Every structure is written in C-alpha cells, then in structure tokens.
Length: 255
Image (tube, rainbow, N blue to C red; front, side, top):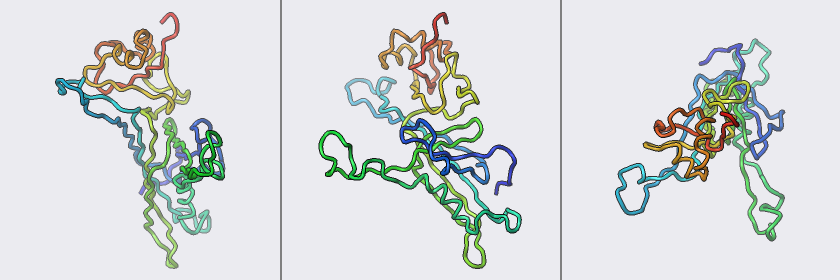
C-alpha cells in the first residue's frame, strides 16, 4: 500500500455541467494517498469505407466522431494510519462516499424533465447525469464524467466496521485531449501557439496523412501553413502516424 506523503495531494473538484468553472467547493475531495499510476487512453471510432475500390490503403477507412479520452486510477483510504483518537471517521466508507458522490446521477433538468421550449415538457422523461468532475494532481488535469467506480473493503474492526478501502475509478470525456499542463495552462510541446489542457479537440494523423489534407477536411485548407506554424510542425507533408494537431490554432502575424 502507498505510504503517506508530504507532497501535493490529488483532488477531485466538481465542475459546472458545461465543464467551465469549478463549483460546490464543499464537495471537493482531497485524496488521502496519491495514486501510484495514472492510465490515460485515447480512442477513435473507425469504420471501414463501404465504397468501391481498393480498401487496403489509408483511403479505405475513416474516422467517426471526435473520439474519447479515458482516465483510470486507484485511490487508497485507511483510517488506521491516523494517531489514536485522531481519525476523522470511524468507518472508511464515510470517506469513500465523498468520491461516490461523483458517480451518483442527479436530475439535470426542470421538475418535469425535458426542455422548457419546443412544446410541452410534461410528456418528456427527466434526464439524469453524474456531476462533471476535474481530477487535478500537480501539472495533471482531467475533466470528464465518472463512468465506473469499484470499491474494495479490505480491513475490518472487531465490531464489523471497514477501516481500509481501495477505490478504482474510470473517467471519460467525449473528445481527444491531452491532460498534462504546466502552471500557465499550456501544454508542453504545443508549438508557438499553445492550447489549454482539457479544452481543445485535436485531429489525429493516420498513416500517410498530410497537414494540408487534414486542414482541407476541416474546411481550413487555405490556412494549413499558419496551422503548421502554430503547432510547431516542421514537415507538414510527412506527419508521423498518430500525431495530434490542433486545427483551430493559427500562428500570429509575422510568424
């Protein structure tokens, strides 16, 4: 089990449903132990092109949607490590329920469900969703929704109270974004333009892709040179497979 540490601790913070500002500070959770590892997974939905012709090349497939980014981590809680009489609770579940708050769906619309416009909302079912959450640990930031939580109770008192628990979390967001940011909010290696962590959807280059081609698909074919400069791309005609490009970035005048 991880040992107590004096370095900056990770924290879960509630976000406004539109993923802009942090809210409800009384619901923020500072973890007892920092995770040993963080696993970030980037994924795109890819379908085979159904058109005629040779389907073996890079033109035989296409990306669908903006992709997803997922974060997996494990947290530990142990009330036996506090000095005698100083544990904040007598049951570890009173700590883990603070994390469980972020997976609990809650109503996100009016009392009758649905929208207040476009006809009566009386016939629409109410909608529910878990709170938006920001996981922050030093220079790492991930905004998303908790899609899975697994709690393991491992140590019990003589009167049947759990004293130690591990919590595995899976969070996701519906776009491809990098989660690492420095204290200024820009990403390392983002090029001269820079872009904010957890906010900018990126295009991913498939095998044989070029920057002019990606820009043309995004309706920005005339701006590919400025996009290359903003992203710090030295060879726009030879993009390494898997390269992420911010197609909304533009170099400032004179670059």
